[in-house]
Image (cartoon, rainbow, N blue to C red):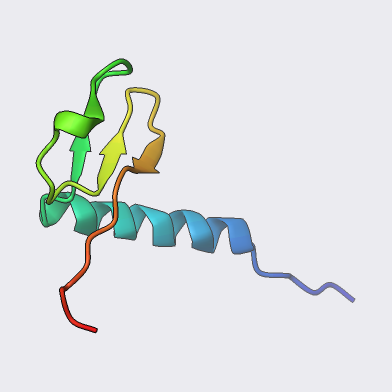
Length: 66
């Protein structure tokens, strides 16, 4: 009897790709060089992507509401 198990890694990769795509579309993700000073980027940028494809969050934003 053969049962297939879902591949959670594939689903996570697709979810991450979609998330990064939405960040890029809203201007919250920008591509940077390896040694770029990310502290000088505009406040609306919350994530950066390095040449090797690594995406890192550099700051949080808040809506101002509590």
